[in-house]
Length: 214
Image 1: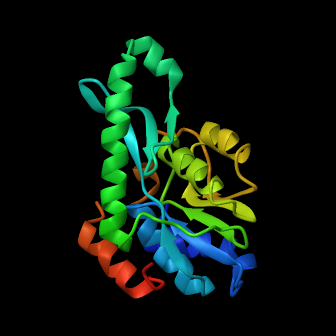
Image 2: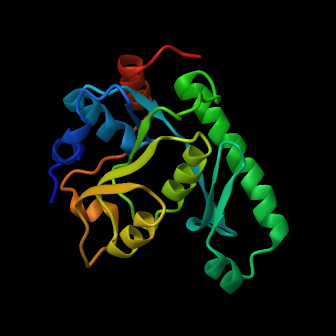
């Protein structure tokens, strides 16, 4: 188990050392916990940081049950099995996707000052999160970043569910993790300390790490 996100990030950075001091690489953190991990990774590898925000689409009457995810430009990833099983109306999905895409844009403007991105055509994009369970928000982030045409797309996380790892390996150029083992119930089970990350913590990291705002 990891002691905390700091410990997990140090172990992940060791596995990413190929990219240390690489001017063609950039770390893209997924808030919230991914920002804390990425902060340490960037410190250890001397890499710049940006963020990518996606939002989970919750099921009707059960916001915690993911039926998919959406990025800031409205691109959606849907869990069709759950949608079919719960008979979720298309109208609900459309309305919820628009609402969550707007939330993502608002958060981007709050965190980085703009929701606009430059092309990543000359970059290795290293997507970082603190752990991946079902992976819908991460898949949404990956799809969004593919639209920015990165030279190489790397997914890096301290821990990922084994079945999700198989899916992710098919949609990125490289997947790097520290742990991927069963039984997997939640990301938090792999951390002794797994506290909620606040907006103020994220803003503190970004104030330290920020590239010039566009």
